[in-house]
Image (cartoon, rainbow, N blue to C red; front, side, top):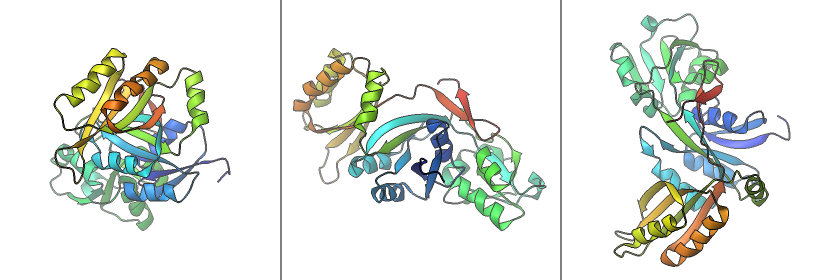
Length: 300
């Protein structure tokens, strides 16, 4: 592995959607993947290595926000450095030379299994088994040479672990997209570069509000006055403070000076306002192609 490779922690094993998102985001750059079986493990590994970045799923069009990841990000102290949107496709794969008639068991992550339920209604003899990760399921089949067992994973995982596709794109809903965040330690030099090139177009914030009538409405009114558009708002309860909430918001930046002025205006009305990152918005969606790589997909 080259010394110049970007070290990035992903949830899952090589070939998982986090891997595909990282490859798409960083383009031709060499990557050193650090597989993690959970998001807490991912943030723990980042804490142990100052150079490591993380690729973290934050939102899916079918299941909504990954709420626990908002808390992990806030508590970690890391910043959002970028984002990527990926079209999620599920492929059914097994050892070469087998057919669907040979398969009696399919392993994958619970979410992948749930998103392919309609397909398996036509194969009642197949037992669905939950595992920690899509790509790890494919890896185990390839390494153990297990006949009769298939995995749901990506085309890239099939390539990596020497499996053949038995069925393509078996997900029930084809409008399945995940938004990933690239997180790491603050990089002021990169932020200034984006700003000078006019590519600093999005920011993520978190704050709490006093439990008073109209407190959120006042914030939204001020942001509207400064022509700041909200692209996302997510509330989470504050543990130990009944009926009080943290608000996570994403805003679009078209005029950086006006954006900074809006923060100064809302700060006195909030509690513990904190910027989680200023970065370039991912306005283009990508999908995995048949070769395990990525290509542009139509916008939602």
